[in-house]
Image (cartoon, rainbow, N blue to C red; front, side):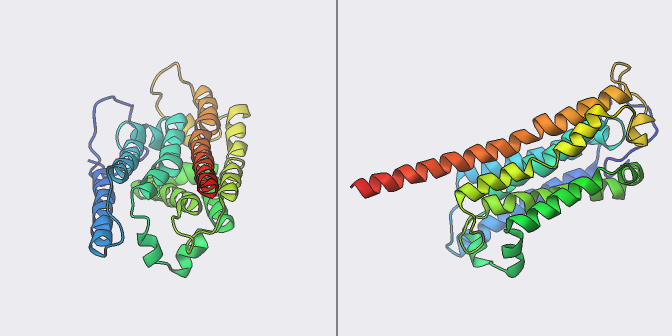
Length: 268
């Protein structure tokens, strides 16, 4: 039994396989949620709402889907398109939901230089984009994804880089993040630019980029290595941009609501 999804030369089977390491990580994430809220409520900082729990559990669900069977197993060593889905779920979908599910005022009481630094847009973009580029280099993918520790490290790196990416947008307190609403929208737009490069390279490359997925046992004869690679590029750009644009829209409408409230107050 493997504890984490990783590449193998075995033929693909749709028979369910357990990955207890995945379950432990997801369980730990859920424990963090309830412990953080317990501390915040005991300190009288904030009370948990249903929305907080729903958002966090949705993020934990995205984390589980990305790393467990079948998506995690397919992405680890069979289909580059599934590998890309794993990346999107871990770096772009799960992180904002996890942040939204944690106590917001709690961060003001735990303000540190590191927390403030990561809330600045430039360091966050550098960390996120550097992780994106490094983990999609052919040498990295073909080498690291063949071992459980390499696959585990890649998944955790994507999750951490995603948490860092979304922190400047969702950091709840002025002492942590001083980005205006307009700056947050510009930041999310900037975050969508660099992923275009590897996405277009995958779509238009005339040969398979990764030996791991080119030589992997085929899941279905219809999805050849070339077709799978083109599909991965399309998923990275088209689907990968959706969470960023949803965040963009959320910031915009929150900004508009605040402006209307302020105008209504001034009129009174």
